[in-house]
Amino acid sequence: MKILVIGGAGFIGYHLVHDLLDAGHSVTVFGRSVQPARPLPNGVRYFSGDLSNTALLKDCLADIDAVAHLASGTVPATGDKNPIADVNMNLNGTLSLLVAMEACNVKRLLFLSSGGTVYGPPQEVPISVNHPLAPICSYGIVKVAIESYLKLFERNAGLKPIVIRASNPYGSHQGNLGVQGIIGTYLNLASQQRPIEIWGDGSTIRDFIYVKDLTSLCVKSLESNKAGIYNGGSGLGTSVLAIAQLVQEITGNPAPIVYKPQRNLDVPISVLEVETTKADFDWDPKVGIQEGILRTWDWLNSAEKA
Amino acid sequence: MKILVIGGAGFIGYHLVHDLLDAGHSVTVFGRSVQPARPLPNGVRYFSGDLSNTALLKDCLADIDAVAHLASGTVPATGDKNPIADVNMNLNGTLSLLVAMEACNVKRLLFLSSGGTVYGPPQEVPISVNHPLAPICSYGIVKVAIESYLKLFERNAGLKPIVIRASNPYGSHQGNLGVQGIIGTYLNLASQQRPIEIWGDGSTIRDFIYVKDLTSLCVKSLESNKAGIYNGGSGLGTSVLAIAQLVQEITGNPAPIVYKPQRNLDVPISVLEVETTKADFDWDPKVGIQEGILRTWDWLNSAEKA
Image 1 (cartoon, rainbow over the protein chains, first blue to last red):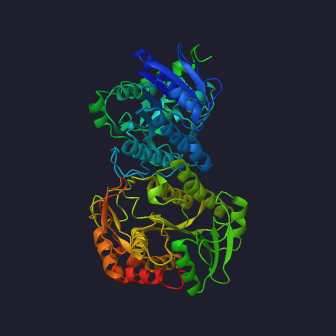
Image 2: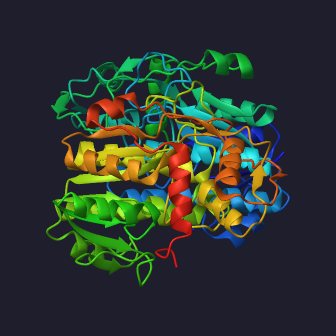
């Protein structure tokens, strides 16, 4: 297939682009930066612009079979600071994409949603894909609204959307800015022999998924005939403290762990139920948390990084 | 209290403003039109502008105790035509209001949401306020997103929001443009002795509430200390065909009823569960459907209309 990856130079996009090429697909990438934030493989076209630029989007969509939309101008920790900007960039950006796809008669869309924020505080764990949606941060509110619009365009415009509600992806090529996932942040602090900071007492439990496991799911779901909403996680919970301790062990960081106040937007536990996902896509996460952190640490110390 | 009514020159706003004055409150109205769309009582200040105009909003909010936000730039039948405009006007407009209220330290907000669209096709009837939210039109998607942001501002900024999910209000001073409720539309057609048009077979069931019953609930909830989400309906279901027949009877319209194709956005049945609302606000809808249609017909033929 000819696949347009929106956000294909981002952390997850980087891996998805490689996986799609490995699977024999042809890939075009759309991103906000003038130059792609991460290097793109040979043969991948890059379009730079804003999702509100309909004319440009239509150029990108010519001859495309499917779109993978991974782009987000915010992360859970930043959306609340300016909800109007969050809505403009992410909700209206996606609506602009849907309108352009309808105009270009492109029906297939993979959308990366957020299993960590759309449900809000879980009523049961692991969280089924049918759990009520009660997001408590702007990032999650916008993801819920986008999912609803995908269903609207499915009904009214023949869109064939597949939604993956990802848990907490981590792995090589993740940003280290302190907002895009604690594993990258912790490893980065450890590499500088600086103390790892835990928000709260570290009892917060998350479902971490190695990025390659998530992108292999994205490829399988894009190649499938299915439409609908799926959880994309490991199905396993790990506490933030356990992550910190694993990072300390693996890196030999001499600085001790320090504790800071709990952030308001954190739900205490989030672990996704992924049995349906596994069955429907003949998919299984392969990389355990220790192995995944080790691989990420190796990448952080490798020549490729520099 | 000093109350700012956003959309106070609209159909519901018109009645709410009168009810608030009758209850001894002081009222300021904010609307989009340069001149208010409906006449305002003496002593009511009117501000004209866009909700994105933060400076103007702050002027309006000076010295205000509570805000009633009834404004919507779309109705269920029009939102799908341009979802980006829907999001900009209604979601971003409301976010702009919330930001201005936070800046002006105004905590109390009544928001009129939509019991007819936020739930989507009901899993059970009557629909409890805890029913899952699965809107199938842009209007409903935006209302759900706004409700989520109200909770976010409640947690992060001390907002004290009360949400009334209204069913299908009707009554005097409603628009007759064919989009804002079937009762006004049908009465208007009957007054011209033109045929009433039913979309589908008329079996669609709705919960119609006389507008004065809805606005009395708005006043009681604003005067209360409660925050949270409530259904605002009659709790009774009436079929569209029954409404058409009542209108034919009351008006003596000689033209026969005609049937047109079902609209895509209609859910087959929507009746709200309102027991909690009645108990918490010592409120009861007083005007039955026949009486309400008769009152609306009388208004349509009265000198006040002209």
